[in-house]
Length: 453
Image 1 (cartoon, rainbow, N blue to C red):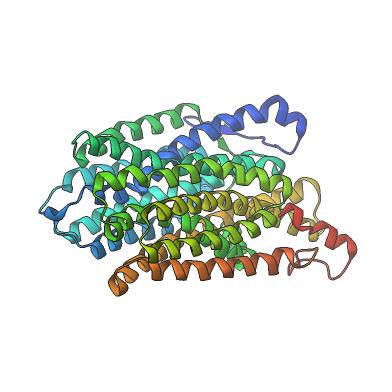
Image 2: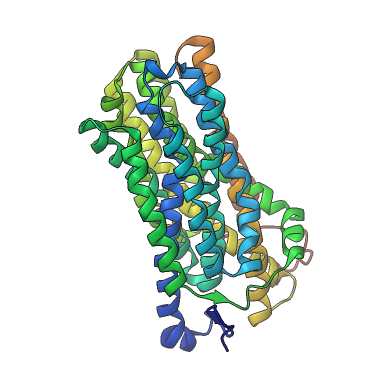
């Protein structure tokens, strides 16, 4: 049955292997591809100002602190709008909301085109930067939508690919800016490239994506997810992974300019490498989590991130540009790997909670899908706030000591906290205990095994 003017799928059961092989996989992959495209452009628009500040020389009259504040407010708005974007899928449908959210990207892009010139006030730049934050919301709606299309056994790969393809929007816009700066072009050339791409994404979503009737408006899911402790525990971990990725993506070029005296072109030659590799490796993080358990991969990933950050502190103090850039790229890669593994943990956690409540079959799947989809928006929003913290930490560090060393020390401490939380909650015992679990039965502990998490 199809609602006039829309594409609605009434029956969707990806856990049924026959349905998946005959119908589901083909439809899910098509929606995944188009979701990635829209989310990819959304990420580019969200991180637009991390690139535009490279064009803003002394004639714009902005200090390094002004630029860090500008990118911080853009990151903040992107984090906040992820919450309503998550639930928009249930209200409007995945296809319908993808059309709307893609079209909305025209607002910040056209506004930036209008004001991007010397003489514009800092308050105007801040206001237009706030508009660009809506690009960050596309991630939340996209992940919620794709989570409903794929079976649990393939969610790590699918969510990793969806998020990784979106994350690549960061290095792509940085590479595009590099080409424009190298050719002597201005920021309006960059903006002029993205306006037609936004229109293409919206049209393709309208023509080829689908809505799932089974994903119904459920405000209770948001309340249940917010009340669940695991939502906030995973948000803490996601601050460490995605918060690092998006925060470093906004800040890397500015750090190179401010601390190491790189020109805009020199900075642009380097800034895209880390986000590109971090985006490409995100699906691998999901795939490894599918195989070995998200908690295991996440735990050791935080160990590696802490080690890389310690080397960054040394490189910053020694003023070694080569070591600094090399290790920063490694840190980007690790943040991308952790993005994939942490997001794989979310569906597994709520599926295990469903089993612990005695649910089986489709009821267990529906419970897990309902809460994991709602929690992803909250986790994604809080995680993106980590990007705000990173930019503000760099701003304060440069104001206080003239380098980013102090900020890196703070990041190192946070990764240590994430390691401790991951181990204590998901790996310390052979079972993840939850408030809904039956008390001490062997069956309950088996159902809550951390390998699924």
